[in-house]
Image (cartoon, rainbow, N blue to C red):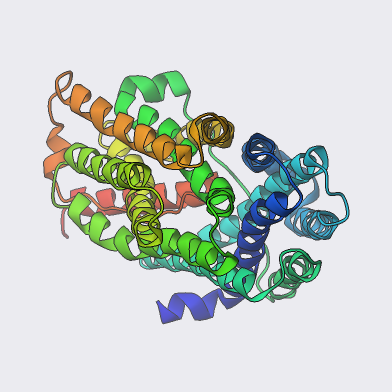
Length: 420
């Protein structure tokens, strides 16, 4: 792990600062919107904008990079992010914040694509799994550290909006000034959704539902906390619990997925996440339960993302595995766009605890559909093999997902190649 960091330290340091900036702006807007008197539904539209921009960027940024190159795209998108971040407290209008979130989602996705293509180029068969793990740890650590910064500042002022702008600007320095050249860029054309659905209906259904779950976690957790009267420090700790649990449980769940039927594990994890969310819905008012439920939903849904990608591979030919990641991320993105809108509508309609009911319904739907699929298709023979699990975050782009698929494919090749 240390060798991986030293070989690409500029990338990991820059990515950490980027994730701090991104984590800050996500939580800040939810808290500041409450002070400014935005309705829950208005904030849900604002939060949905990020995922709309992210989805479009995953399609258009690769072509932009091919035309003008990594460095220009990297610098241009970074400048736009910084400009939007410091404009939030100046243009305090839902339409302006929504537009800003669309732009920021587009730009952050483009920045991630550029950084992750570098990570892909710097990795090889021996360290690809470690690189993925370190990249995911860096992402989660940045988001958690951002929550600590939020708890220290004044959300009614300007400083907390200036800090992520500064961090994002600084994040590009170690990357752009690195002596390591930017790699040649290429992406795999996504597998058609129709073919993915035919290969694994459960994976496609779960990816769509998980998109809504992740959007609620990343975009609406602070809104929920503010609506139920939590302090800024309490909200920061609550959001941190979601991501800390996601990081801690990623590896034990990955180990389990290599030892048992992945479909059964998907069902159990989704059921556990649904029950944890339902508990917070049925017993409102307990801060301890809010934190525990947040940790349960974060610790089950985030590993589920990587688990679903690995499960899909069990029903694909090796040549289709890399392309599958793009199709799955597109399905996930559609769910992420719809997620904040639906949860905002539910919070307005049935109360603030509609946040937990929304999460419970989505996770429960995955579990129930998984049970139904067990009656439609027998267990794959490949599920009985100790196939590898690649850790990948839901905040990643198709580049990181393809990197995970390359790790999977190479490991499969190693297992099937006879010893000399």
